[in-house]
Amino acid sequence: MAFPHRPDAPELPDFSMLKRLARDQLIYLLEQLPGKKDLFIEADLMSPLDRIANVSILKQHEVDKLYKVENKPALSSSEQLCFLVRPRIKNMRYIANLVNADKLAGRTRKYKVIFSPQKFYACEMVLEEEGIYGDVSCDEWAFSLLPLDVDLLSMELPEFFRDYFLEGDQRWINTVAQALHLLSTLYGSFPNCYGIGRCAKMSYELWRKLEEEEDGETKGRRPEIGHIFLLDRDMDFVTALCSQVVYEGLVDDTFRIKCGSVDFGPEVTSSDKSLKVLLNAEDKVFNEIRNEHFSNVFGFLSQKARNLQAQYDRRRGMDIKQMKNFVSQELKGLKQEHRLLSLHIGACESIMKKKTKQDFQELIKTEHALLEGFSIRESTSYIEEHIDRQVSPIESLRLMCLLSITENTDKAAGKITDAFSSLAKRSNFRAISKKLNLIPRVDGEYDLKVPRDMAYVFSGAYVPLSCRIIEQVLERRSWQGLDEVVRLLNCSEFAFTDMIKDDKASSESLRLILVVFLGGCTFSEISALRFLGREKGYRFIFLTTAVTNSARLMEAMSEVKA
Figure (cartoon, rainbow, N blue to C red):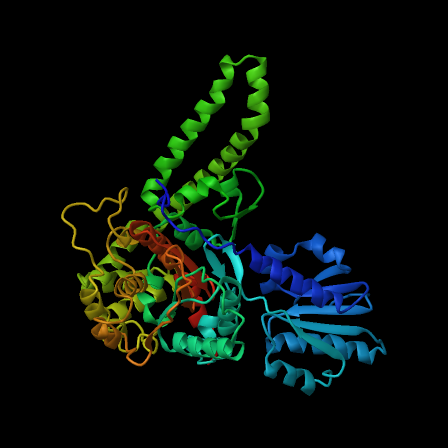
């Protein structure tokens, strides 16, 4: 159970430095407005901010009251107002309404706008249009890398997918390049770079330009991470559209993990309260089950509960001295473990109830048939019935998209809808799948307890395409021999390799690989690559524009501006 890292696995870099940097920069910006001030925070930034600087830190720097940027008017009596926002036009209108209302009332205050992670020219234009550009001071909080876990960094930009892949808006590419530049400044340059996709290539080229402009900053630093791999989400929509069956993925699909935390409701906590739980490697119970196929999790938790009970039962035969030691040294840890165990057992029960209600097995069977290219007529009937029963519009849309991409035809989905066909542009999934052996041929039952390959993250039915591409390129140290795959991915101009001879790179660093997912990555892909790392003696580090899943992808598509 749980994937113990090999004894020879390389150590991960310490990413807590990124949090300290972000916190120090925010404090510096707040101190630019000396004295008491009220802080208005955009809803999207509240969770990331909480991971960097909690309320008490803000209070230490003279933040008096906190408000959420929302549609209703703010009733702040402070003489100084500070706004911490994403660079969005609607936020500029909100600030302008507030400042103009003050002007009408003859009130003078100081206003400061802090854009995170950067300000856009369009925002300044709106402030100018509204006649308040001269009344506010603008700054940037270049906070674009949030360590969610020891091996996972997120830019917390869920809109990146919609803006770039659906609307062709390239404004976030600079943010990606700046984030990569910061990483190479702190952790040394990356001797081996690979990438695939238009966005990956643009981000890479802009990042290289930044490196050249500031040449010298990373020179002489010993590289801590030997490889970097940039990958566009539109290289592989199939993986992101599949139902997740590893524990962490299922928790995300069922409860939505937001910024590394999840809200477990009363049905999980067995009380009348909801509980916000941080899910990361520090939660020892979660860390052992996060990458496991869900079918193994319950048995593991039951065994753990029995072991815990046995440790509690040891108290019975203790004398006073032993009891004193037990209480001072072990009891606290056992109670904490007990609390976490109850939560995860509660979460499993809740997931099982929901999945039984949804007839999850039938759904998974249909997905596997689509992936393998069998029983297409039955799958189409299942999807039509799903629509007729009005189970969930988002789910129906997801299945139609999966059908459309795997069959590379609008005829299949044409009976139902042509949604998604613009994105599934000439999908050659079937040919790519054969070429890269994505559908494992298994004699007998696939053993999910002892996985043989990355396909376990989809019950042995399918190896995630994104992860297979990464595996193949790393094996070859280039795209050599993958020309046909690159062509089928419609990416002939956008697959690149860049090797920089670096004698300072240690053999340890050459086994560390940073994978950058542009447009979001799923917990299934993270689990699959963690498994691959363990098999091959690498460690993967993940940097994503945001963690995504099929529902988030579908929601982003429904939000596209007409």
